[in-house]
Every structure is written in structure tokens, then in C-alpha cells.
Image (cartoon, rainbow, N blue to C red; front, top):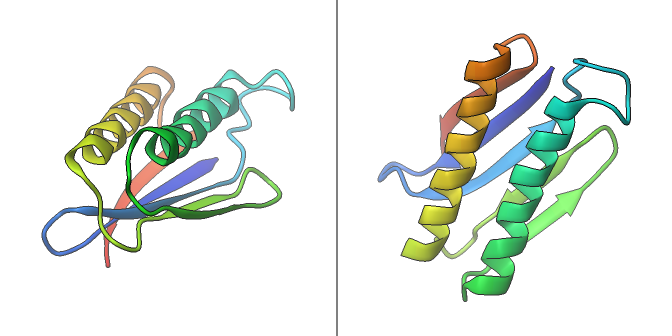
Length: 108
């Protein structure tokens, strides 16, 4: 199962997100859920980095691990990109079920 944790502060402003695990929907290299989550989460980070002036810190690791943080907060543009990422992730859960992807929101 892929676990995505979205971090928000007390004002519900995004502070970052982490992604870990594998969906197990199909074998490695053919897993459309893993591919979809990877595209959504990595492209969001890349888009924020390229198209906004927001500060972004991140790291990638083994087993699908991705950590993205916004140390100085985010702009309206980044919020829109993150809202879109969350929508896409929620659509995957709706289409394929919680067995493959779990999204949680955590206040920091």
C-alpha cells in the first residue's frame, strides 16, 4: 500500500507531504497506481519549484519514498497545485480503493 501524508498547519495551509510504499496492484514496472501516484506527487513538486517563487525542500529514497517540505509557507499558485494533487490522489482512491492507497492529513 502507498501511504501519502499531507502536512498542514493550524490554518490548514500546506507545509509538505510524504509518499512511501508500493501499491501492490501489479508487479513492479506495470503498476498503474504506483505510476499515477509518482507522477502526481513528483510533478507537483517540480511544478512548484519551476513555476513559483516558493521555497521547497525535498528528498527521494528507495521504495517510492518522497518527502517535500515548504519551509516558508506557500503561495496561492502552490496551493492550487497541491489542491490538484490531492484531488488526483483522492480520485485514485475512489477508483481503486483504499487497499492500494491511503491518504492522511496531519497537523504540524
